[in-house]
Image 1 (cartoon, rainbow, N blue to C red):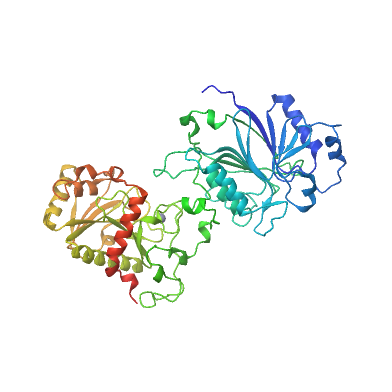
Image 2: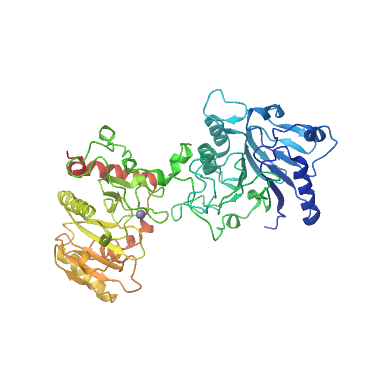
Length: 538
Ligand SMILES: [Zn+2]
């Protein structure tokens, strides 16, 4: 779409240095042409005497560009902002107001929130409250067509903005900044978010507003913090950029992902973030937070102490499991994990329904911490994996099914032991074995038979790629992957005519159901599994 972009400038704390700022803007415009707007975040006024401001206020001097500013961040400067709904402070200089949305004639949407975070009531004149943030959110995000806004202006940084990003220098984003603003940015999905107050410049790598492969692609957000005007270290305080309002953009153009895009720094789970809860940084989570509420077990929700005194040698101090190098969908502590699919949690492992499973009761045994394969597991984790296997076999047997397990340690980061129940009436264990052997032969995949009770660790070297299937007798068929192993092999064989006879389900993407349905299936599984649940034993 051939729309002429707007040319904008954003500025950090002016601190009353109006002449320095506007002279700089004049110089830039002289060199590279006029800009449409100047947006100021942080402290516009300083604590120094007002002589300079008087000249602008009385019209002796004039801002060379239409300038929009945020309100006070401290008691001393509240006096300059008389009207909470926004007003003209001087010719060409406008106070936007405490909070709201400014839509320019071009269609550009700018959301602004003045002041610093406060949880005290009544809220001081230089602060915003959780209520302010939720009313802003309701006002903007309540329509189903809401896609995001062009620009978000806040004075404080959003807390955790450095998560998954490039270094924010000396600013510790886990400690400083506002969690309310993080929640707001999560929901508003601004294309640009500007902040100041930390006396430094930080341009974060752009981040995604969607979860890859789970949600439709959305535009990315750029967070930019600016330094103070005329700072002696010459840190960047003015940021020039061009923007076409999103409502005028072609959808495909809008959602184009920059090559250096990262995970969303605020997103724990979509639900929690949209409720504006403070989001703990992943690193701050302790082992006890794995015991989140599984809906139906409120009466016996576990605490981090006083449990598992028999099964675990150190009940009070669960050892912190390994951490993944980056975002992981299966680490239980990770924000990416789909918690509604989790059906049972042990000490070292957990059970989750498979997304797009071959059947409604297709589950995964997963380690809570980040382990890539069975080969890497420590003895205590292996022990619990075995306990889950035995329990699941008993559980499925009671329902007239036998289970087939497989693991593929190839192009995957976090160990997933797939457990697929097959009705006893459909076929025998030998039929299943034959199906794997036959289809492997057809695809020139060499399967080694491994006797019952033998250990994969003795066969697979650490780091080597492999696939194996484990039959309900404990017997395994093992393949050492050299290259180009078909990722869906295990599923394909099980879905084939010889076993489950659901060939159209061999691709998990074809089997995905709505989140509501997933929640319903998980509830049902938890209830059915409860009589077998060893984690409830005392
Ligand atoms: Zn992981």
